[in-house]
Amino acid sequence: MRSFRHILCTIGCLFVAEAAGVCQSQSPTELFHRAQKNLTRTIVHDIFSPPVASRVYMYANVAAYEILVLDKENYLSLHGQISGIPNVASIPAQGTINYPLAALQAFFKTGGKLVFSENLLQDSVAVLLHEIGEDDPEVYKNSLRFGQAVSDSILKWAAEDQYRETRRTRRYAYSKAPGKWIPTPPGYIPAVEPYWNRIRPLTLDSAQQFKPAPPPAFSTDPKSEFMRQTREVYDITRSMSKEQTLVASYWDCNPFYLNTQGHLNFATKKLSPGGHWMSIAGRAAATAKLDMVATAGAYLITSIALFDGFISCWDEKYRSQLIRPETVINTYIDEKWRPLLQTPPFPEYTSGHSVISTASATVLADYFGSAFAFVDDTEVEYGLPERAFGSFRAACDEAAISRLYGGIHYRAAIEEGQVQGELVGKMVLQKINLSQRDNHPRAVKSR
Image (tube, rainbow, N blue to C red; front, side, top):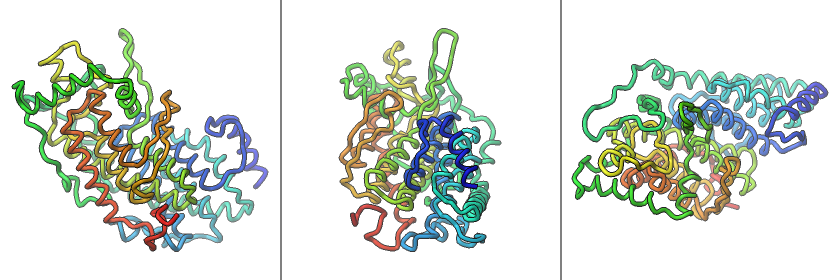
């Protein structure tokens, strides 16, 4: 068994980019970080929308975490905290279990069933499972079997969240009323996930729980608040500093980016905003040198904040259906103006980046501490430099204002989005407790 897995490892190291051509022993925690990156690369490859990507992250991380806590008495299962979540502890285990191995198996099996390109994940599964270092063939087999059983249970629960039903809904009908959103250049992509508010949330009572204040009323009067905020977008984008331009590009995270050359259109695959915050959670856990279960907790709490954040935000987007700055500016101010960033294919209010970044920062600040400093290298592989932040709040504030610099959001969507996101994050913390001890991670408070 050992020699067979050794062969798989050797083959995997030749073909899996993340292994960098070298198959060397790593800790289970390091392997878990690699598993997260593999899932992110698959999500990017499949061009999932930000809400759908958050769903993939959440269920995969629930599966892994629920296995790891079985072996850690100081950590609490989500069973009993989230309505309907399976009781993993009731799933029979045949023989001795290597819990990190089982958790990786559950993570890959769950994530694999929620993406299109499951084969991309499977290319590296043999490598990562081998490197756990389990030499006993029976324990190895028992662990994979248990991980599969947990994944099956989580996927059965996931199948009841209304996702499949929203795939069968009628095509979104655009409002013809003044001030309502319509698709934007260059691709004029149809509305993305207009029925996402039907998805079952984890900690929210409903998608409408944190309904934000309405946006400024649409008006073409130059003295109106709406046109004042529109003019702000126009003026800022015409005189930005190099730093503002970098900030806008750094937080772009647009999986729908479309290149246009004459009659040729092709996509550039990019990270989703949720993927960026999952990367930040991982970087923070690595900086704090957390063990595997504490690392899993950081990924988990972030994925839940993202998931519920998108449900809350998308509920408002398709309620207010607010027109994007690009459409207003081109119609009433300057027909030749273009935003620095491509306008995403959904209504403007509230800002998705502002909601999910603030929700993520809220739970991460609770987990690691409000003054936790870190270096974010998420965008390096996309050609952008690292950025250092003194806190998660500083990072989410920058992510939020980047949407004004990018020319795709009015200030009200950013400010109200951050209010909405903080409420979502606080609700996640109110409903979910991962630790039995106040001084135990939820993470570095005792370190």
